[in-house]
Length: 221
Image (cartoon, rainbow, N blue to C red; front, top):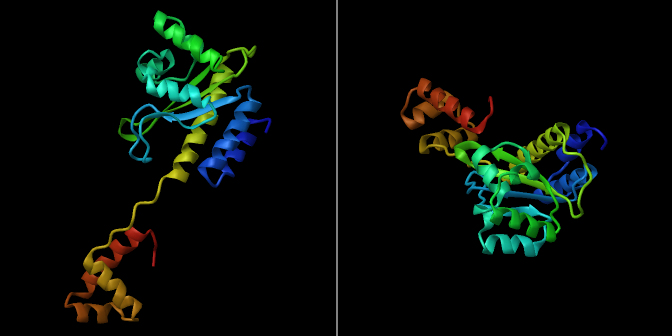
């Protein structure tokens, strides 16, 4: 798991969102962050998820509950950066020009075991915005470099893409009544000519329906 390639390969082995998050937290621990959280900064209807910090998280449950009940996102400098700039950033950079209330929130977060970290925005269709936050239980001596930021961004993005593939259900195939009729007659062993005669349409029309059926079912014959 020393290289980014190894880490991406490990994430690709996950077959459930739970297993994926376990592998993701192991990777981030290897990279120097023992606290990891995935959440939605907006409602994400394409994933069936509501706006929430910590859909998958090992942050303190009491902190996540306090954050939600007090609706702290409005004064959270990391969340504000996420919404306004939508760029990866160290928490320390988000806090630089923050208000006194925002800085107090960050001190409270540190007391809850979140001592600095990185925010990774995950933008999707229709303005949907998710995020990955990583942090440390103890004060980290790790240098904040662009290399660290870039690596965390890459791994988080791959995590998100695989998470989407695991959580999203395929859209149900919707065939028209005529298409169902043609499929049923084909299942009875009827040829296109025989189906055309039975349904009182031309053979060309039957083949037109077959073309649409193949496209909807993503098959070729």
